[in-house]
Length: 159
Image (cartoon, rainbow, N blue to C red):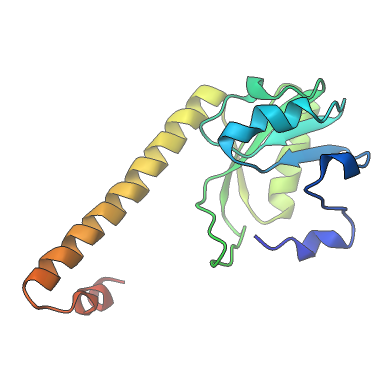
């Protein structure tokens, strides 16, 4: 995802040693790296992760905790729009929740309050629906190709 829109007012880094004081820190790493990264931050400010299937309690920064989970598959080659994108929000503190709701709305997204258990089920559901659809698409391609039919003919009729 391109972050040029934020670079005017926000310092962005992937080096923990270069972190400056901020009101909010967003950890956007693989699910398996969230605990390690947060434990190295040692910040008393609001720290959130962006994972759907990871409990908020995994954050070990020593500060306030939250989740800012966009219900979206991210692909480097696909430009992302936050317009009407569902973002699931969880925070320990009501003021932090309001901050995260405001951020989502500022991005044009649709914020939803959701606890870790609900978000985990939502994430599982979304993965299942997305992957099952892709699986069915691949089966359809194989059926078409095994019968000498170009699969892309069927795609144009349904998109």
